[in-house]
Image (cartoon, rainbow, N blue to C red):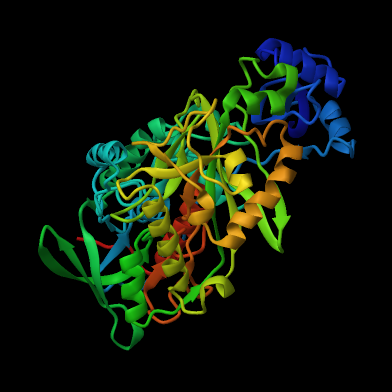
Length: 536
């Protein structure tokens, strides 16, 4: 009998054979009776710094008698294993009046396009940015010069904003579509570890090839992909989608469109403006803003793992911090072990910072966003008032950095004292092309600066050394999530424009690679369940 057993203990030094013997001992069975053993999930348990180990969910073949005994042990929480079923969708019968168009090639758009192509709907998938190879060159040029290409940058282009991040594939949701996302990433060349690790990540270096392979799958399945192609207009007389107008290289094309997936990403502020002007139902939503903080990765390792910090099987440690200040949540976000702080703007006058790390997470510094909650009452009731709030912060940070693409940054000790930084200490800022020592209190809203100052005392108690004087803060982290939501119904369609499916982070319904991909799959399923595949 095949049994899934959670929370098995695995020593950091256990290899395959020794772990098998350990599992047999933990279950009280003869090792010779135990059949196959497969690790389903592996997480580091570092609650006691003197006893760090892996907590493992494993799939074990056991003789019926032993299996029944393990299943009867209420403390084990074991379950009979059922193989997950592949994602299937019943096709609808209505004919499509025009093409299925997917706008945006972040995870929401890519996975919507992938499922539609797999099921024979021949989607047209577009992105206003460029293909991966060209996009990487443009982003590297931006990081060297401080000047972003408005149409090819860390926000626009193949793979979306997540391409230039840590490539985390975690999700709070228990939606079975999460497994489809991970399996698809694996099929496209992601590291095998993502299928096992409790906190899987691909790394920006590996993710770029995975995204290209996923695009090639869409094309091989009958889809069409166009880069440097922008959605200019949605034609929906009487609230029913009929056509879209696309632009490319100065020319425009009107296409009959039977279903439109809007996976625009939160960087497409001009598209938000167009949607608002066109009568789409939009609403402001809470988000968070703050700074990126950098510490030596060795400090984080030692704080999290104690004497085990240098164990080769642990790698770079991460952290997750939460606090309250002035009635607002203050928390860490998108923590990048062994990573870099990078620019994430999409044009002039935008100083936006983000974190990025490669698969090996071998950089000298750890970084994370530390952000304070922002509510609609902080910026206004209009649907785009949150966007305007972000723009003011980004312009203020740009100006404080000197207006030449350098980011404003300061030592933690200086920030807490309310002064600027003249010289950095033991922690070297990683932002390219460089930073300007500044007083970040001059570009952050007072409630954000006050919230960060108050929360640091809590964070220092949670992670030893977190409050070190030389820790570096870089501003401004303003794109944690979309400040606006494109309202949709239970069927996934826009409340005001039938046939339009807003999805992903830019629509205000997701917050990461996996959740955005799952949202894209849902939209594709909704289209597939209504319409029959396209022929001819």
